[in-house]
Length: 291
Length: 310
Image (cartoon, rainbow over all chains, first blue to last red; front, side):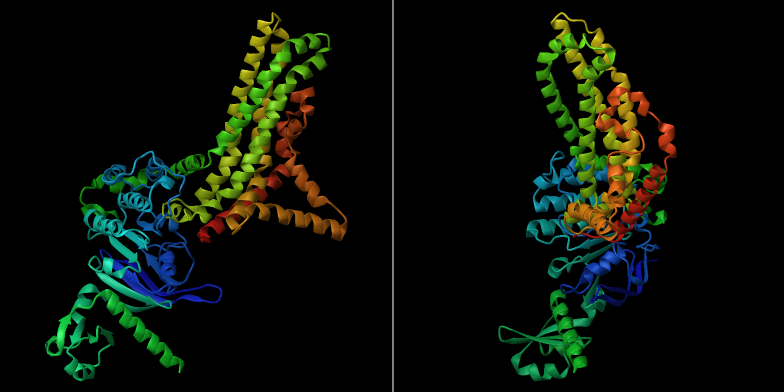
């Protein structure tokens, strides 16, 4: 069963179109990275999935319609919508009490266990904690919920590198298993690259790239081209070219590896490089249409 | 649905299968109301503070108590009763005024504060419906706050009576007049009746309106709560030279239905004269008010559903 399934998902604010007919399908047990520039529609898409905003089109999350059944859906879905959305007045012990009180799938002992690994005191108020500690607390609450889908929207924005690394480490080691699905939207692509099983690029309200990581690794090749072979390399129709320290780096889609190895140093592109390439091609295409 | 999650290591299978079924519907409501009390400590701190200040003033005033009692003994029983019961009535009135002020400020912030500090995103990530949330925020000023005030007032008036008794005994006077006219039990009954009928039922549309404004306003909910009402009154006055809207609001604010005269002090003549629950319950004003309150709350639920952080 697909965890999330959308067909023709549309959402327009007064004058701008945030989502222009998105089709997407996320299978159970995947870790999907949703990457896009600011204002591309990432948050709108996630809000629709979480039942926070009305939409047009078809959307099905764990067999439910998020907009009309948000409270039911939240038994099986967790989300961290942003850093620092925990109310500042709440005490750590109260947060535990409250979630344990309203959530049928919350395992308090588990949350206490996660908190024991941190320096967070039960009697502290959220306003007294550092930004990193607030994220740790939120993650401890969320990971103690036996949910089927976890949605994270920029969960580590503004945190230092130690907390960011720790965040994804605990998520992978202590939380993820093949029955759960995780959707992460973030700008910091490099950090989650190794975590993901799938990646999606979103641009101007449309999904412009949707591949599994295996596909990415098998299809895309980046070549640091020897200068004398640049012309030969360009003849193979790279999808993108950039210059780094006077050398051309060309990105190829579905071109024979043997052939490319002869042109220079071959490597798998990073998601960030792939993202830039896809986005620039999108921009060119958009200009082409405009002309 | 549950069968899929059985494989999760370290989680007992039974709890996953049974847990959703054993969560009674009332639990989210119970915890939501508790949550309101955690967040809004003014619900009990403000009445406590007012009670403490009043008690302090009362303690000082007991210096004159023996003299006052001697003077009272010369008066006719009616005047005597008025004189002795007066501080207790003032105490009740003050506490009810505090309740109203706390309730108003509570409601204006209830659905606005969570959007302003973005915590609405956390609350909405939990399986609590918007209806439960809005109702919990309506129950707080309508039920919880009056009961808290009642408890504090009872304790406060007990202390007043005990202190008075101690002072009178200390100066060798009889306490029978005081205990006969203090009639605390009657005062408490009236107070509870007033709190439940006026604060609980008669004021419901006021609290409903304030909650609606706090769910809707993107800034300064306080102004949005007051200015439209003022505007309607002014327009009515200019257009028709009438003041029906203003009269209606004033009637709503100072009571009307049942026991509303309590605050104006006329109660001191005979408390039980105003104790007319039957009349109150059949007054159309009550039921129209409750219907309006329900409509306001329904609109607030709808708004909360689509509102995000501001």
